[in-house]
Length: 101
Image 1 (spheres, one colour):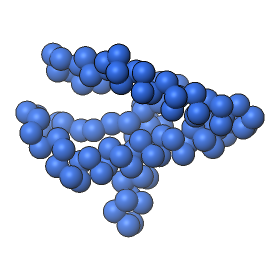
Image 2 (cartoon, rainbow, N blue to C red; image 1 turned 90 degrees about the vertical axis):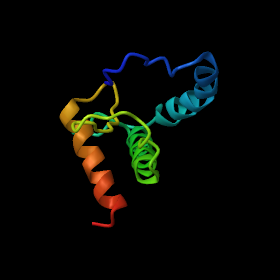
Image 3 (cartoon, rainbow, N blue to C red; image 1 turned 180 degrees about the horizontal axis):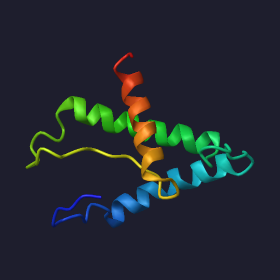
Image 4 (spheres, rainbow, N blue to C red; image 1 turned 60 degrees about the vertical axis):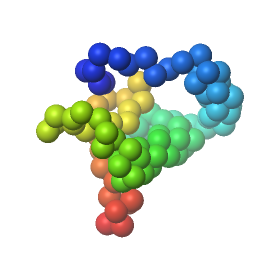
């Protein structure tokens, strides 16, 4: 979703490393039923919540402080099969849990 000039962070090395993880997630989901509201299996939901947790930890560590940012800069975690509202809601829930609310 970034609008910066250089978005080529998916290298062959990253893609090769992701393949085994992707396969494990897909295999774990094979026999699970999708939740009627989120259309995700429990494994997919746990995976997306883990991704949100990583993003929140990156924010908290100052990992993005070196980026040139506008006032509107936000981090975002989304699955390609969900709506923007669904992903923002999950991210907000994860942020709330992370902050102990």
